[in-house]
Length: 264
Image (cartoon, rainbow, N blue to C red):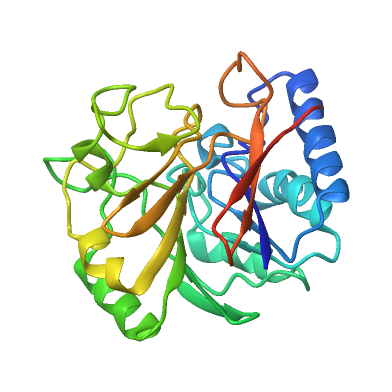
C-alpha cells in the first residue's frame, strides 16, 4: 500500500497570493502525478489562527482549495495545533471534512483497516492547559483506547506533533552522536515537554509513526522498534524555504519512503 504524506500546508489568507498560488499549484501537480492508495494530511492544513472571527464560509473555502485536489483518491486527516484556532470547533471542521465522499476521516481519534494494514490516527492536541508544557499531550485514556483498538496488530500511527521521546536522541537541531538516522534535521523538534508514555505504551503495537509540525525536519530514525517518520512542511505558506517544500510517499510493506519536492 502506498500512502502520500502531506504535512503543514498552512493554506491561509495571511500570506501573499503568490505563495498561496504556488502551494495549490504544487500540491495539484503532486497529487495528479503520484500514484497512491491513500493521502494522509498530517495537520495544520488550514490554520484557524489566521481567520479570527471570519467564520465558517471563509474557512471552508480555504479547506476546499486543498481537499478538492484529492479528487477521488481516499484521504484521511489528523488535527494540528493550529487548525481550530478560530471560532469554529473541531466538530464543525470534521463535519466539513466528512462531507467529502472520499474522506475516511472518522473523528479526532480513529482506526482504519485498509489492505491488510491497520492505520491509527491520533489528535495530538493544541496547547497544554496548565504548567509544564507548551504543547498539549496525548492523554493516558487515549493511549489506552489506542492499545485496545490495535491490540495484536502492528499499526502505523499518524499524528501532528512528534512524541516527546525524540528529545532523548537529539540536541537542538542535531542528533546525538551514534544515533542512526536518514534525512535532515534543521530545527529543534517541538514535542510536548511532558511525556505521558505514548511511545513506550504503543511501541509493541506499532511498526511506524508519521508526524508533521516541525516544518523544516524531514528525518527518519527508530526508537523502541518503531520507525519514526518526520515530514517537513508541504506548503510555501508557513516558512520561507531555502528549498521547495516536500511530501513523502510511504510504502507500508517495506516502510521505505520517497521524498518528493513540491514545485509550484
